[in-house]
Length: 127
Image (cartoon, rainbow, N blue to C red; front, side, top):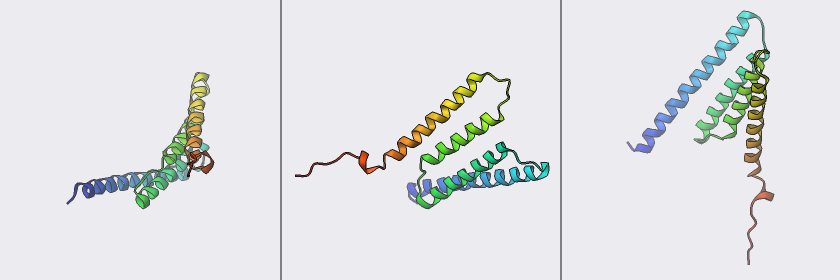
């Protein structure tokens, strides 16, 4: 067995383990929302994080690559959820830092998307 195939099998096993955890987390969160008969914004954001993780796994299994924008979007959602769950008596500077983190990640996503624009690619001079 070649080492590349062995490593690929380990990667697939690990990704399937992550998928199992995401599905279990998603279902348990839905179960808790159903039991308390209440849906809050933080709960929906957590479900969205689980769905994004599942989407990232789907792309990985289909293409054997992870697009960097998926983890960045998950990070923005996680920080947004953190802001929503934050208590009102905490230091306001923490809110500013978290907001700046979201801004920096959003700018990173924009920069990553701009690299595909043909107008920004260097032009070659053919003679």
